[in-house]
Image (tube, rainbow, N blue to C red; front, side, top):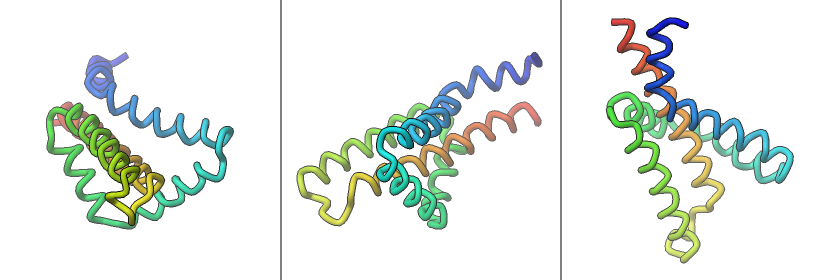
Length: 123
């Protein structure tokens, strides 16, 4: 394989892991809990039209050099918000909606970060 491609693959392991996890959740969710999976991914599909969310996700993925901070920070924020939903602090949010936001943010941030790695080699 090309040395540039191998280098991109080495640097972007976390990006591919996140995108693979989203795909894994979609496939396994179809067999385990079809209605819940459909609701989550339909909500995620509707969230893509929320441009501010997409701009934030792309900015996080493209401009923060340490992508681990973005990935684990997003997951940490999801866990904290899910706990607050459970405790009744956020009564207007649901965990399904929050998980949809997490999928959209991590997906777009991963793609933006992957593109950043690709651009480093094209220049």
